[in-house]
Length: 376
Ligand code: GLU
Image (cartoon, rainbow, N blue to C red; front, side, top):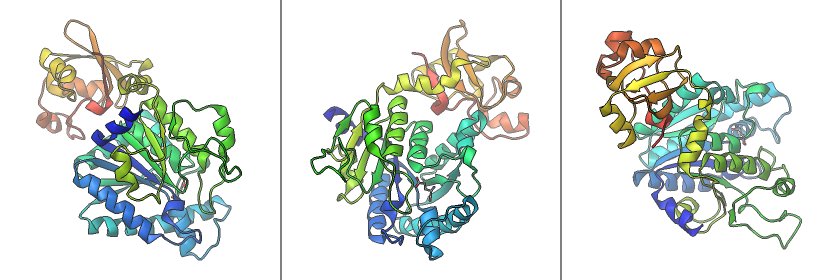
């Protein structure tokens, strides 16, 4: 376990989730001191060359406060209106504080559909990766204003774990107003002990968790356990900690025993295989030359059109295909950025020629390495 904690200092891509209870005082107003402190820590990690994705709640709570409401209204349209009001303020605040530390941010609003449908999943992933490539910090929230019940994540704990999964993060940190997971409810039991590590989530933990948070909050421990389950299955370590700890983010990344660590069940490679478990159905086959095989297998590169020799099957963008070497051995699976027809046209050509051939170019890669599972 210690080794896992120690390995956090090498984590390159970190998702950090902050909840409404962290961002605001119990009266609903912004806790500027705390926000400043957290933003400064994130900016500092970014300066060290790490990639940071921030999943931030607060839109509805801040909107409610703006409108002078003491509690969140019950009807969906009213909540959605408040989210529209609050999301602007939220981003404005982040923009201001991150800018003070020289950082650029990007607003990303997601709905569950963006991750459920393969094509949109692919878009969401590619956009987030492009933002990271530009050295920008994405600030992600649910698109509360347009979302309807059927396509809601409902809470940002779940959203943050799914985001960690799609960008293949090294670590998810959930910051909250609790120290972590206790072996019984600390509000009722003074002897409750903080668990520093959890390897398995059992139903009793969920029963103990309870659901209520503060007035403007959604989550509570139950949604955090749900998020932990997703991370554990995806091979990503997750830490729940109290945002009031001094230097909480940097100390977690440095490997200190803070909060509760949820230990992933499987190593990343294996989990990745599952993640592309979309890949139970393979929609086509791409055969590639020796150079591309080496690039994929040995160098962990993306698949570019130049190395493609043959395309079989009738698949669309976002489908999963098998990648084979010239001898017919399946060396990888991945999610394609172009349809079979398009790949047929650009096979063997350089990425710089894609636009001329297809009339437009959204991607240099036929399969981005993030969406590729290599069968070594
Ligand atoms: N998306 C909601 C908001 O920004 C918060 C959801 C949550 O607290 O988990 O207000």
